[in-house]
Amino acid sequence: MKQGLASQQPLSPKEVARQFEQSTTLGTITTTVKDVRYSAEAEAYRVSFSWVDSASGKTWHSDVRLDHDGFGVYYGQIRNGPFIQPLGYKEAFPVAVTTPSSFED
Image (cartoon, rainbow, N blue to C red; front, side, top):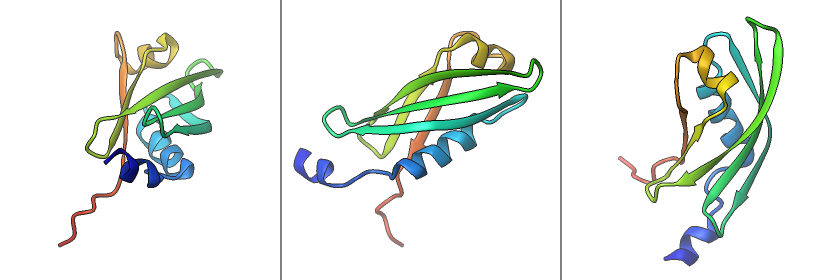
């Protein structure tokens, strides 16, 4: 079973970046993905990103690990204070990217 999952590239780095930017560009924050790396061994993506807080004009940089849930979703939490606080979050901002379903109608 592991062999089958590892042989499929779950999502292209460009698709991970597109979904990540779409779900994290909110309020005064505009997010830009700088790099996406996939580890087949860990079944996880590492997303390096930056964002500009338009309220302060400041640019920040961070990264987040998105772990596979076993059902086609890669999920992580951004815990960086300058990112989560302007959005009204206290501890973490959840972020996920999803693979297309193989279910056909």
